[in-house]
Length: 266
Image (tube, rainbow, N blue to C red; front, top):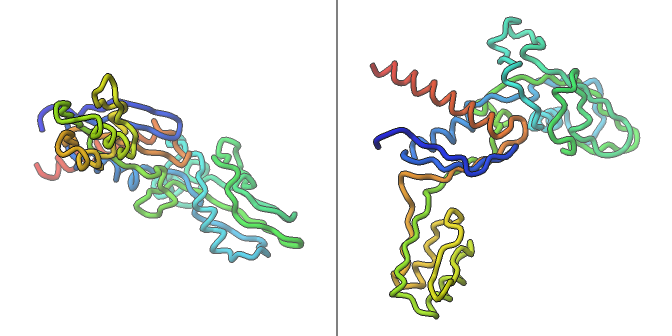
């Protein structure tokens, strides 16, 4: 592989992104995927103090559910607790504190978690935690810290990152007839094959899943393969980080790891 890796942004929204990564191999793209999953830090609840829990769930189950709630993360303000100047005691630079107090019947939602500072208000306020019935109460305090997905899934900011080869579809029009064209159009699961002026054309190449169903019904008139140097990379976030921040942080960490590896082999 010669030259620099090229990245083209196809779509980048607040919580999801789609990229075209060219001039590289599956190994690099997978390294980026794993870096998103394992290395990018995010905020999550780690410690919970229960003052009263008369609900139908044990403390441990509620604590686990609290840990999985996405929390807004500002990597410019927070540092990992083990790197903080407070030496692990917990301070505003490394720890975000929440309280929860509910006693009326009904569902307790993630939005019932009250942060010390409104900037740390939970991302999705309608995540159910536990249902309270008459006479039940739930009172607790929680501490959230930065962590990485390689330690626990609650610190994974990315959701379902994945990639595929960029599709290449070659059509030999001379081998197609009206019946074969109709079969190819009907069998395509992504519905990207269309008939135009008596010819079979592709409309929406990037949607192709490389299933090759069209190959099987056209007796070699269509050839489908993946470009081994270009990849469509998709990812989503849980809302704790926006898609751009997640991508840039993963790229920065990956670059640092490559530099460290380079030093080790010299």
